Length: 482
Figure 1 (cartoon, rainbow, N blue to C red):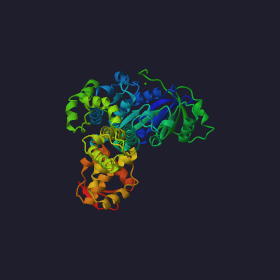
Figure 2: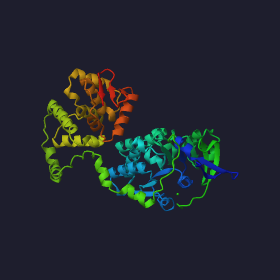
Figure 3: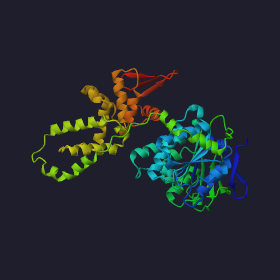
Figure 4: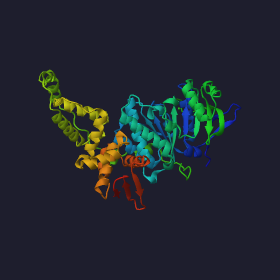
């Protein structure tokens, strides 16, 4: 079976071919300003390779559902399913090798990002026996892998960056070949863009994007002017799956209007589109029920509590004590509130800002007057309380906190859980407690957490052939886990 497809023609009219099997191992980055023909290029690539390899398209603008009529793709409306159902669908897509379009057009931007992140993570975490080759196309990738923090919540940004990084950096061994397309290279996270070995650069006018595109193509600054002068539908191509030298390509026509594994390519199943859709959606609720749902968030305050708080706002100000409050009593009560908050079910699944706001609200409700911890101090004290570190003696607590000085704030909680267990000499890692401290229910995220902490030199992980795992914290005793 040939793995070559034609994506267009060069300036002399010679066909420019794309090696799909090579693409599975080397990934692709497409860049072009609005109107440069970027979506047309993606559609051409998808249409030409539709019979060769499974395709999964993340479509935030609703551009690609038309692939369904011509090529049998199953269109999944992201707004019609719950987060658990989206993850279950992703697992079934890998199992049944369905070519799908995840249409996110009906969702708000932050909902699109969260839905895409959960979907990609579930694709990535699929069982080893379902690691079939698949092209994963992510349009408008600067939304899903932003170079800098924007207006989205921090936990959402962390989730989507992790999913996109896994796709581009570690997806190859799982059969996933990332194809990311962006209007602005400068807005795309560098660690995502840098993993691509093939490039198709369309017209761009901003100097910062043009220079970065030229660097990826190995061109000097004077040659970079060619990128600004490209016509609509023309791209500069480079990469092992296309050409070894930069080549100008005019993308060919499309049919649908508006758009590795080491074993190589595999023949696609001949299941009819309607049967494939039935395989993906039949008894979806039962599939979701197999995995335990994450703990429900704490209930919102009752309406009468809110009304009482508002009604007595002025009274609280009038009744505020004229004399300075007992700062030691206030500090003790603040510690108690942090411990109570850390022990509540589901609190770890909230963002850090939401946890801090809940803490401040409870302090105001009790009319606590005195120095309050800022958000940085709160997060560290919250992590200490959640890990139960206060149960240890002052000397050991101080020793562990010294080891944790270089730990990122969002990883402090799970690191303290590991450190406390190491000090106790336990024979088993309590992964449920570790997951709660990290605010996740995904075993894959726990595994990646341990890998990250090990790369930082904070822990040492050793695995044996029987699946046992030993985790050690330098400076503390080792612990083992099955």
